[in-house]
Image (cartoon, rainbow, N blue to C red; front, side, top):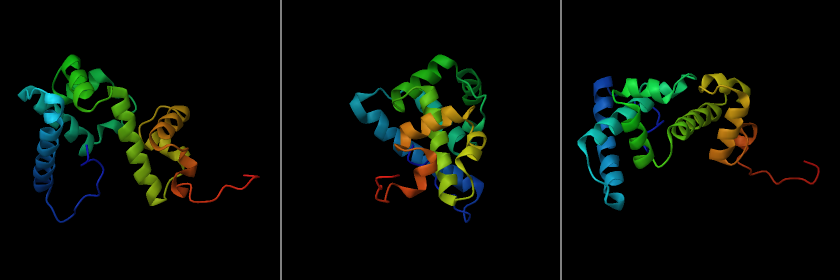
Length: 159
């Protein structure tokens, strides 16, 4: 998922961007599927490619009501195959994958400096502030309100 959340290159047409994304996905797939001697089933590759496309381009993770059932219909497979591909190739469960995408998106928005952490809850597809803060802290290691500081400041005794 290294291709996720890079700033778009405005010089490329949508078709060229899609082709470039799919070439990167194919390289990622070859790397991921060769690890641990994973079998290279064509159906798994198609599901993997569709997952990355729907997360990268369509940003379906922004839907707070996105579920495994809904995403499986978007990807064009059943929940068992989708869950197996996510577990096996992304090394996490579906909810964790969504939260990782949402947190990466939140970090991009925080880096731009236009939004407060409270505004990001809805913008990033989280259902509540507590879920957002928990997922962000788990992924980044700090609460969103401290994120841009990157802990470069020396903590004072009275902080």
